Length: 180
Image (cartoon, rainbow, N blue to C red):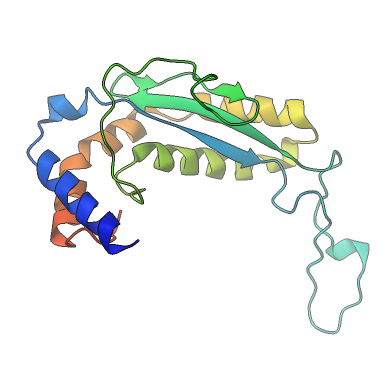
């Protein structure tokens, strides 16, 4: 994070530090994210202790179809999660699936203020616990949807409720990184 990022974050936090809970509940967070089917792109990974030979018993499970990834877009707000939309390529003006009525200028380099990043992280953790069920792209798509549907409203509500504390943390750090 450079000094310009810090300055913008600090200005943004000062502008929003007195927002009410009701104002924060009007915000919709959205973004796209890529989820990798195999963290090692399908190449076998061998874990062994020093002095052990390369034996199949030390190889981790290999994704049979060679790995790959899926790109998704979604959003959430006080009403809960939006749909998980699978997209090809990357989102651009021509492929955007919605029109934003009011676009808030959000500070760059601010994952602590961009709650959708926390939602993506939670989704990735849920997927890691179920990776043994994924053998192909359709399995992966199914598990992504299932994990998405099981992210509870309380989790997203707590993220929204934390915004005043997050703004204050940015102010206290003079725009620098925070514990969030």
